Image 1 (cartoon, rainbow, N blue to C red):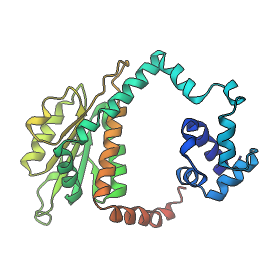
Image 2: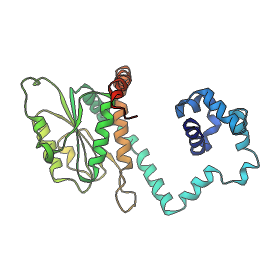
Image 3: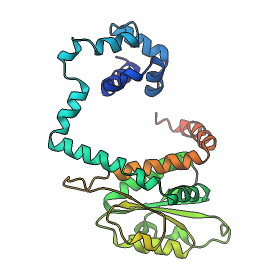
Image 4: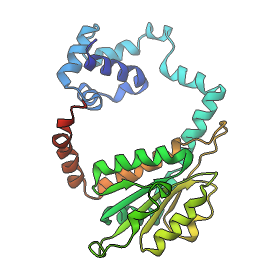
Length: 265
């Protein structure tokens, strides 16, 4: 297969149970290819269109194979399936967090800030660094900082930038890093708005900022699950971009011209 065809094939396999509501156009949009490419691929594998593919999936012959829904239910019966279900429940539980009035206030503060700092420690440092890069795609002046690397030199008061608004997003989970509360306390003393993304057991952050959002991480696995935390951070990125979607789209659109000379892709 070509790369485009392989992308379509993989998407169809992973989304078999939801094909009833899809069209050739919607599949093209979700796989990042043209609608004509979808049509050509379907003809290549023996179907005259998406309707014929849907009919084949629903035919008696198809029932001889293990249906995607059956694979899902069979997986849920095992230990890994149980963990998947708990992780999914934890992600759905995030609705209670983003439904709080503080959510909109925190997103507004991040959107309006002239500069946003992101930090995370130990096992979630990588998660925080990835989030910082993703957030920087949709808004400018975002950077990851590490207290041990720079000693918070980024926060030394500057006369030139004295009037700028600054915000900090801190990501942490049990066992909480010793410097986490110190960093938050220092940020608040310097007038920096603080948003804390953390797990369900955190009780110290609320004493410093109302913008504390929890994700359930204890799903019964050997280690805490970072999946719900990652999802919560993705929601932050989306919500900040949604404050001014046209501005975010312009930034994303301008990026390739800056990146092109690196020749990375």
